[in-house]
Length: 280
Image (cartoon, rainbow, N blue to C red; front, side, top):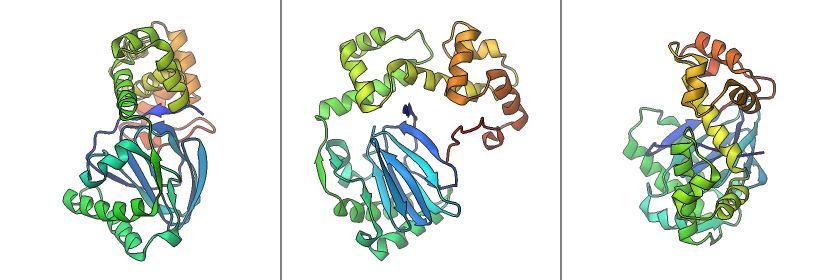
């Protein structure tokens, strides 16, 4: 399965788990997931892990990961934050990778799980300083329970971040792997290898995923035509756009746009094609 790039700008996001899976993706932030009740199946860097009540998993920056299955009644949360949010641990996030990204309940103290519940209950409008304090202590326990190995050279990790941000910013322009490699100052083969090995997707598929994601957002604007939308998303003709859209969503763009506009600003009510994943 290919990964898509997700832009996260929050200083600290804490969201409850739902029963829905979330497809393979990467972002420049750290993602910590803790299951408090039930169980779920996660994939991190190509390996699947079954998390049960009391287990935790962590995905370091630019590590492909997904939520593949969540049992009915599962309760837990994901905390997403930049590596430098907790400065005490930022060097670990920038230079190391966990040998095993999961901490099972037996290695989690009751205090850690209690703090996790408190963090989950702070809500969207909760005090950010309090959230960060909870996160700091939780990370201290979890990172202490993990073993690590050196990540790719720091310069290479920095390059990965530059690449995904550049491609995200220019995806809707006339971008090619050649023009992107030239702008980034690296060879085409290096850029192609990075996408294949780190993000498990080729360059063109990565571009299409970003473009179609933007198209689905624009489709909620009742004043835009389908032609305006596909031009704004970097496509020259409706046929290419339609093919890419169906490949990403399983729906024809016109049908998706009608459903999106009926749903208004509530994306959760947009019907999904059979077997299409829905975000948490």
